[in-house]
Amino acid sequence: MVVGYCVGEISLSELTFISDKMPQVGEYVTVEYDGKKVLGMVENLVRGNDALNIDLHDVEAIQTIARIGGKDYYIKGKVKLLGDVNDNLMLPRTPALPGTPIKLADKEILDKVFKVKNPIRLGTLVNQRDIEVNVEGNPILNRHLAILAMTGAGKSNTVAVLMDQLLRYNVPIFVFDMHGEYRDADFPNGSVNVIQPKINPTYMNFSEIKRLVNIPNNAYIQERYFRYAFNKAQNQINEGTEHTYKFLDAMYGILYVRSQEEGSDKQIVDVMNKIEDAKDKYNNLFDNNKGNILTSIKVGHVNVLDLSQTDESVSEVLVSHILRNALQRRKNFFHGGSNKTLDHSVFFIIEEAHILAPNKRDSQSKHWIQRVAREGRKFGLGLCLVSQSPKTVDHDALSQMNNMIILRLVEPEDQRHVQSASESLSKDLINQLPSLNVGEAIVLGLMSKVPTLVKIDEFKGRRTGGDLDIIGDLASFEKDEEDEIRRQEQESLDLGYNY
Image 1 (cartoon, rainbow, N blue to C red):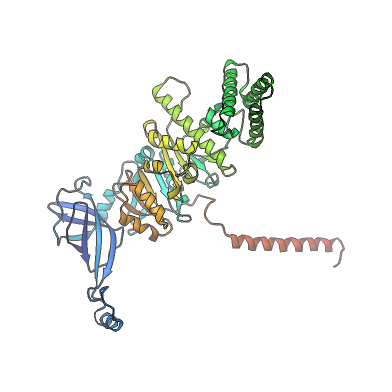
Image 2: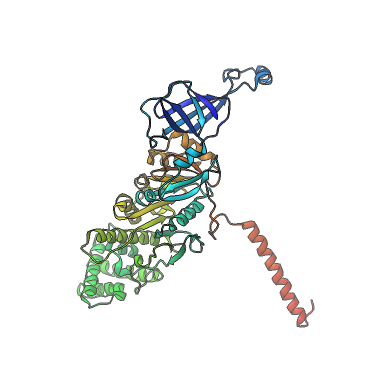
């Protein structure tokens, strides 16, 4: 079906058309010329009437023209050209002629576009629900992914749909679950393996444990004493003269001996007190009998690290610790030189990425997220950053995400930040973000042959997340209280008491 005709100057990447029919933004069209069939996507639409132009200021004249010729309008749109469907979506070398008709792309062409080798089904086209949208799995795992949306736009549902699809390929998924949303999920294609946020201090490096013990970076004397105790405790464990489960105790003892030798130096005492405070504060975090967290990962499972009961500082330490170890052990696996290896790929999903990789603040978790974003693909480590506040996510990390699923975004600064991190997100697509409905998303990047407007499937197995029914809960609370009062009154009557 012809939806319009090319007008004006036409480039190799976009064209303008005029129509008397109203297509929809996000619909695919084809332009045939010079033996080519070029696929395009409608990115912008306006409707106008030459008689009712912006320079007309007479209200009565407007009313008269609207009554007589109000239907004499035109539709102007912009199409982003995506490539020749007969030449592997390669962009043509010559532009179309003005006047060339534009037709809606048929189902056969679109089915061909969304046919991929390792399909990950996300949903259907927003404007054509009979067209299934599949993206390629390997680019997601190798080249990273960002899932971005304002609160309530369907972000968590999208994450769950993605995880369930990846389970079909036996992918070991590791989720840093900041709100406990996925620990009770029921995935049709796999199971959940809940990992407790416990860490053996023996496996922590100096900077991680220094942060937990709260030794400031500018406290040079305290840091020197702390490093002395840390290194000596490590040597004692390696030599077998101390047990791993006494690591912090060993550090405390080493400093105690030194304090006796140096006459209870105040700086040493301060470090000893901080070690004692850390043992009390992080009693629920430290598990001296636990092995490396990475050994708890199960292939073909959603491995959920439940961080819902931990504060941000602990979450940052756990994220940096796990990513650092994963990257080092995958390097060992590829290059040898150590028996401490991770023998399989892992796809890490980082919820609340704006907290763990903040844009304007340095942190250890941000450092290791950046490292995995840059180096992970070489060693089979994939990364997915999830956030409802894109403008506060580190720009360097976000720009390494070569795939994006962007749901509704209204805040202009969020939109600008995302656009600056993605080469394939045009201004016209950015302008569509505020008008997306819940569960609708723009999908783009290496995982998709073309930018796509998708209605994400609904995941029915997620048992938590979303908005609470506060009014319903309070109504139930009031009813439960009334029932309890009646029960107590009945018990009193049964015992012979009268009011």
